[in-house]
Image (cartoon, rainbow, N blue to C red; front, top):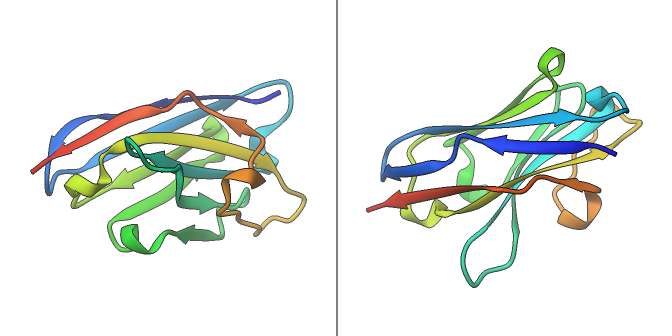
Length: 128
């Protein structure tokens, strides 16, 4: 069982930056887990934002965040980050961290059903 705890959300203005963190813990090593960020805006389905392989060598982003968001991980701290720059009002959502085990060091996953573990979410609100 893997536990995920997100932090770093808040209320910012358009153009500002935020960095979300997700700390993973549990009896199993999370070093072999692919990590992802998803978001869900009011009245909308949860959507993929970014993912990073357990090696850290592969990343993949949803088109609307490419060039603005960066996903990274610190394996020693069992933490994954989402640096969000040039935030827009349409980025407003609850952001969720997700994890799944993968044998392959460069695998990434962009579908929510691919993930087994989820955090509780952190609210990001961007005002115009």
